[in-house]
Image 1 (tube, rainbow over the protein chains, first blue to last red):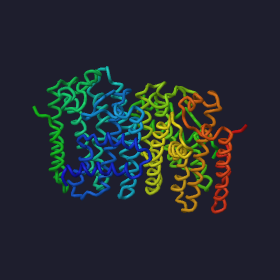
Image 2: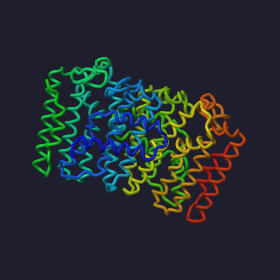
Image 3: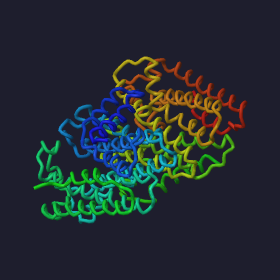
Image 4: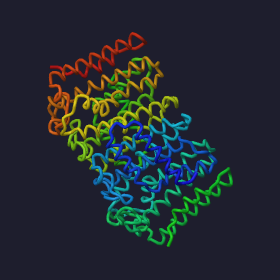
Length: 291
Length: 291
């Protein structure tokens, strides 16, 4: 299935959830505004490409799990942008949720996007054991032991000089856990062997690191148009970033190295099981920064 | 088991979840500050008393499910109190979470309390089918089809004259769904017959309505000390309330009527199954307002 179609079906899964039984129409408007703002859909695409790489035909249930992951991610962006947090006016080139709908509705839209996805997974056509595993891992990756913890540490690290190790702990939680989720979730859905799951987990972690290094580089070098949001926010907030700690060139080299390592892990997967790495390789290659 | 012990074990279940694997200590401080602020623990107690009323011995899993429910409820209180929402400085007689920890940490503490409980249920020692049912219903009761929708409608209803029907829709979602959750959850945990579940569901709905009528009356007539928060906020926000729509005396009569109806439903349960209503009856009687 083509990437474009995958993206559409993830959005469709989310949209039908919200349009199926609407209690508060403005809440749904606010939620879907941020969902439909687009973005690369990297996390859901990683999950869907992984499933196909293992030869799995995609079903509605897979799009619902991918959608649930995107919902949690989108909820975190809405709350991140709030005045009391990063105070951003633009995201993906359009007004942030609170700028468009007001702070109260933005808080509640984020809340809905945290509470709803677990029900969406619970109603999907998958075995109960698989659903429980997917829900457990999504909760763990996103809550006080994952993403939210990373956001707190990130906030506390502003205006402070962090060590590289501290920076990595922040990012491993703030962005790493949800980026690694597709790799864990694919293992649960396909009920894969432990050694394959182990490789997938490593791959997810490396990719998470690469993604954050890339994000820090782009925040520094890209302009508003390319970024869709205010650039150099990290500098303004005096945040420790990879370029700040390592220098720009060394950060670019680190990114290359991590992406190469992802390629090696994909080769290892191919060596031990029936795995077709082309599409997932392309997604990962798409994270390289040229020039 | 005595109520006091039940309360302690619910708090213990929540505390051990947060202390077991702490990534961001200040986040945990902020979460536990609001959890330990107390409150009546009405929702978890209803679940635990219901389970015992059906002759079920309580296990750790039951306290985890009760704790998960209290976590979602507490998260909603933290977000409700935020400046962009109700802007409250006090809750249960102590500073609200954002007054104590700052708005950013309060937002993230609420987020954690929405994301974590699903993992807590997923790890409990219950059959997978039961866990999936409990997670589905908690998500549905709290997210965009339940509590959060009710909060949006409530917010939109400020400074407006609502009909009694609109007011009931708001409350059925905003507070009713989580108050009815113990009755649904008990049915899932004990895998009860459909007719018993139907009675439990009605009981939960009636209790939810009674609770909200009571809350509206208390907001009007109680002082800060009795309420633990600023009274007459509804009047200030020009909110439609039961006393505003029906008058104080008629609201009190409605409360009595609904609580009487709960008693009748308990009698019906006793007539069709082995059900010991004493403790749950006492909890419900505790909601009467005297004088």
